[in-house]
Length: 117
Image (cartoon, rainbow, N blue to C red; front, side):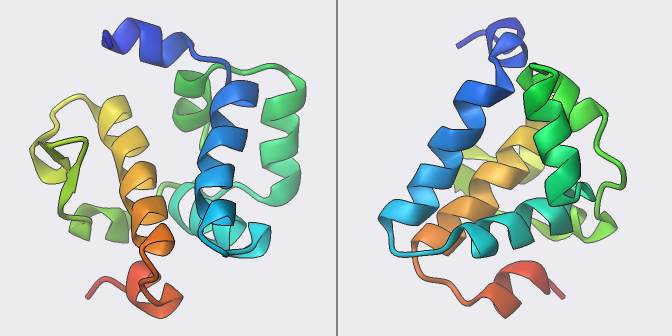
């Protein structure tokens, strides 16, 4: 998928799909939110505001309040692409979230997901 198409995806469609990935593996919405807020700096209310204003996926990441500096430590592959090799900053942020949710879905402990040292 071209990055312009990914950028334009409505957050209201992407967000539930990512949440469902965690829920299907027996995790809670609270665990999911813990990852999203840790990574992006959004609160639940901030996420709800982005959903209400019908933001696209790119805007969600571009307007994130505080991007967690520990995200630079996220390593691994998502869809066969090494996260640390992604050059486009917005795509990199999207893939960081994907990677963390993948780790949650695979049963990795929350403290290991969020504390990457």
